[in-house]
Figure 1 (cartoon, helix red, strand yellow):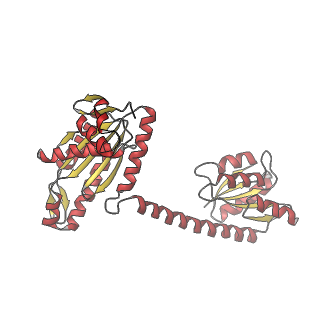
Figure 2 (cartoon, one colour):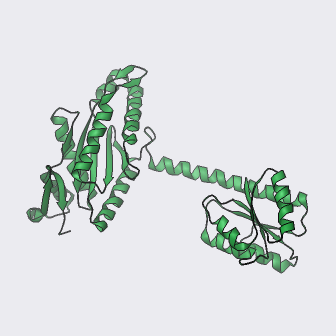
Figure 3 (cartoon, one colour):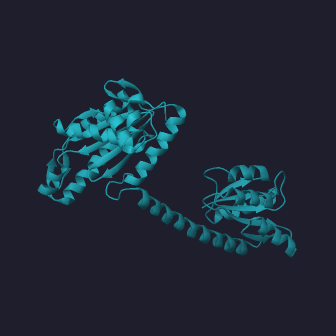
Length: 337
């Protein structure tokens, strides 16, 4: 474990460093409070710190107060090193945020014991953080594919639409659906179907940019959110996904299985997530009817109809939308809303 020592007394500092290194700690040494605060403010800061009470620039209690006000996670366990022995001083140090203290000159066995107490507490916290992260993953991800689940990808879409609206940018969505997936389940069983879903998910994720979002929308259907995209960019990504899925059969315990995917693309300036998804879904439906294994762009009428169904515009006002079309895809300027 990494431990920080902050002490302006060079002799005391060397003694501490030698002992801690002998006990197997990775030691970070600071000779004043300012450098200690800087080290403890870093992302990879030590979680265990021994701070001298009196130091130049920033004293030990002030560093404790700053750390506790900052609310840093993971927690920093602080052992205060002090020559002060009055009960009032000890209480003041603990009240500032120190977890424990040891008096100068310190006893080696006592120091070792108090550090091991700190490590036990930090180990408990690390376990709690792992459990919390596991619960977060469970709540936000699909357990089969590891993708975001429906609720979470919709939440991401709504955030992107709000941000795009503020910045005057468009947002692209792709609705993707594996072709003939029911036949795979019926012919080879659900375990094989699950393996196909996992591999298709892996191939799609591989093509995403860091700021794109993909989630399992339901069954064999996926929703992809493309921030700041125009129609051409969204269509290009959709075609790359189609080619990636169809290019190589998927290896399963039942043998090699050919797979294709159909995709519907919609791009627009709107904060109505349901309308944008509805337009992409209409395009996906046409791709399925046209023979599958293809990409279809939503038309302006797809999004207008989806906006009406979502209640974002009154029926009598639909014709007043300022609409521009790019390559028969949707690029709506929602000037009234």
